Image: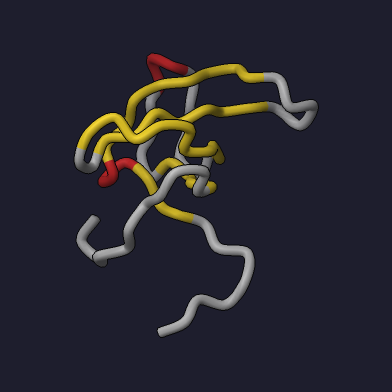
Length: 73
């Protein structure tokens, strides 16, 4: 990612590009469940009931970490 934000295990992330072959769109929210390589993450996407509907490897430039509280500068 160009902004030097580090993605970590169990971070909540959003897609920043459409993955139409997988039925995923920009803004779809998932959780990092495994770090596969430098800048490559296994991301699990679940519905509101907690049922997984997709799990795939994504590069950091395809993801945006989400924050639910203030982040120290």
